[in-house]
View (spheres, one colour):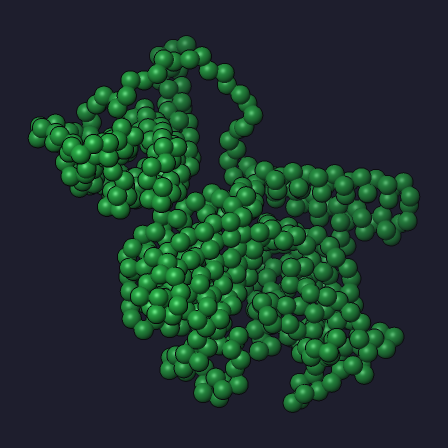
Length: 563
């Protein structure tokens, strides 16, 4: 091999190691974030201390090997602190945890800049100096003596200077490498998922042709292909799915710091961390979750003094949980705080010009609480650094809707608030109920379908000029689907019966009148493209087995048009 070939190989190897470091550093930094929150609650837990030390040590070693000196230097200083904790030379205090969180934020910034190939230098001298000064101010835990101050010439060291490891390295043992796991880029998985989508379309065409020809041999082949397609789809979906724990582990430190900034005591409880969600969804749901948690700390929970006056514990609780329900994942953000006052919401919305006084008078408490999602709505009486700058939770709703998710809120005044986010398992392949209305085929996302039924014209009643249908004693607004989107023809009863689909978003239920129920089908949804742009009430489109196009209904937008 020539010298040029060796240099080229070294460059490729270094580039691969750099990419591996960026990927692995996400896991290490997330683990540090979670462990710091745990350590504050359990300062003597040796397992947490050692696990945190190992994560920082690994981060330092890999950064040094690929030449990321700033990350190496800062990691080394943080490693020194945790080595002092391990040896009993430093006590775990709130101020020490604050400092480690500051170091973690700088490490994350350095990592992000390295990943983006950003050449702008970041000044880390201030955090390095703070970490070095710890040994001059923090007490030991193993004796009554103070840690001896380091000589001045040793306390400030160059980040490029190598220092001895806190402990002698253990002897190197032979390692056996296993190929149980491999790293695969999400681009390759996206490509595979797109191909599976095309296979599903072809499968639907084959099933349709088989049903029309009524050939037993062809039906058997179609059934086999249908089974294999489902297995391939589920297999690739399984590869893309990761535990939501990777997302949840980012939040304990965030909640802890927000609580300290607001002078509140918070118990943060996680559950359902093993629930799995598509990796892409986890990456995009982070910002909405941060907004909800900030809202819970800043607006939801009361100050300790107020909670005690109300007969509550001084420590408020925020619970973050996840569970899978059929083809979707539900995430709940709950707090046991002061709740949302419907009367105050109405008053604030009228004051901001978002609704009229007449609308406020006829609005139910549930509708008033959901005003929190209106653009520009803010119920904060004072502006804080955390929230309350006139940017309401409409940001959360908009971001969740981009992921084809749903968001809702429930609240009891004086008891607390629950925000619920429902996310599909995947963005492209969708379970739908196909219906026909006004000569067009529509797909209703199955997660919005409550039930289907046939009613007679005699069951249709009129209340204040609006048609309703009573189902098991409950009145549902009755709306013709075609009339929501365009001025279509009146529906024609089939043998005296009218097909109805009850759809729901949050607590709202509407009975959609259609011409025909075509059945359930798994479809591949495509966007309408830049030429058509966004069409209100339509989320996308899908190619049917006969080559026609079915429009996928945006149920939430459609219900919004009904009012």
